[in-house]
Image: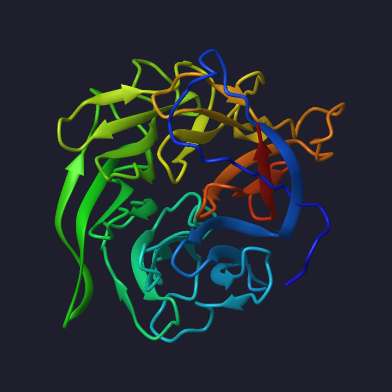
Length: 354
């Protein structure tokens, strides 16, 4: 795979969740930035195997899942041309914590319409599948109605549950699904699937799932739950699966807040936000990575990709996309979408110091 010479590296010192000495602000800052690869989509990092799973568009115009080392070397395509898998868009991979399985989205082989909205980041006509890391076996996990979507599946840290977003009628009517992930003599499948609508909205909303807290007690997600709030102004929330408590972590009616992921120690959350920028829609969106304490306090902007006078400047209008933390919390590897071209993006590694 092509290698580039610019990388974003974020080094994070994990010292527990004590805020002693930094009660008023987070001291972290970006230390260096490096590019790992280009034309890359979503990414996840296996802590068990120290491998990345990414989706990457091929010459056929469809995304497939690739495995690679964290520096981008030893890249191998896992899904292209595999008999029994759809040969359309395949992506949004997420590792099982034991490193044996990867859950992903795959576009239905047969459906009406084009594939433009069936890319892994949008998910129309997508089902959930799971595949072994070596490609030796795979299984379809869901069957959604025609014209519906699935998006952003994530395993719990104990590996027993899977959470994802799904539409129930039209493109704007989302719910959160959560089920038990079971592997037995019949293969891998889901059981006891539940539908969650945190906040009990009275009108259709957008839910996008980002995963579980490290103790698996909470799920973290994006949603536009405020009355009249556009989906482009959605906020980051957590939902306690035991108590049903909903907590709003970002508080802006119009800023785009998305892709919130806990640090491995559970003390911090990095997410992407359009705070500080104005935009009229997806076509002129700019975002940066931010960090906050896990309770939503002490928010701080980390990157300045869109600032021409800053060393982080990419030279393009940039959307900081989805990302994954390193196993030790010392780095994140994320996706930068340049000039609105969602199919061709830069994979970067970002390092923090404090």
